[in-house]
Amino acid sequence: MEKAWDEATETDLLEALEEALGCTKCQITITEAIMKGDISDGVYNSSHYPPFFVNKRTRDDNISPLDTETKHTDPTWWRRISVSQRERYYALVENNLNRALEETKNADPEAAVLFAHYQVDYHIRQHHLARRGVLNLCRDSNDLHELRSWQWDMAAIDRLTSGKEIEVTDEDEGWLPEERMWGWPTDRNLEKTHQVILWKRSWPKRRKQLKAVRAKWAVIMEERRKQREMLLLKQGATVTVRLYCRGELWDVRKLQREVETGTSIRMGRTTQSLGF
Image (cartoon, rainbow, N blue to C red; front, side, top):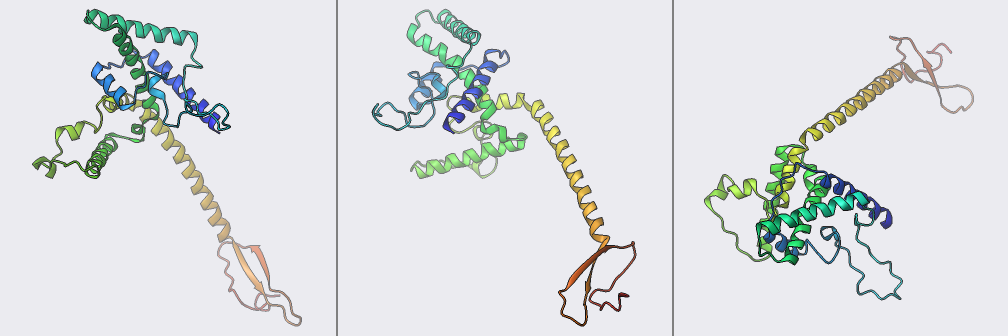
């Protein structure tokens, strides 16, 4: 089960990688401060590869080789990446590195290489989250605003439980402040901001998919309606007659027969009343 899950996850990562390597529409601008924040938060771990896609399961670094427990592995696209994808990946890294060195002549080469990798990995992650992120649950802009408002409410509760005071202003009594209306809590690396851009870009695709689903559902509902009508017609054309046999002790039997429309039979009468 775990192996199948890892393979499915790696397939999703490969698809996100292919999309990102061929993407020319994303205009992502990030800074080294964002990278340092992700590194300090443990979101981006440069000691593993790909750094962004390390899962939260317990690592096996401290497990003895003599232990029979199954070792955990992190799903990655690096084991199944093609030669052309690898070349395109490093070409993007080289372009980012050259641009950084041109803009800053005295840049630290090691830090510049790390940031060049981070930019490419960040772009790949955005395409991966665009396929699996929570924003996919939003059908329209109303759902998006409700999700943003709910996350702000949860962030406020987290601050209360952590003992931090929350400053309440007059704006909180009515209209939401601008940051709460358009921003996201704990979005220091601007991940949610870029996700909203990708979500809006994929709106025509979602609308087309929604129309297809509604058309399929309409066909199903029409079929169910026809089945109910046939069932009602069948039940209306069938009557149940009880026969009470005199003389010996007989079990009560049921006789079902098709009748013409408009024929009425009074239930519970003796067989003589039915002409038997």
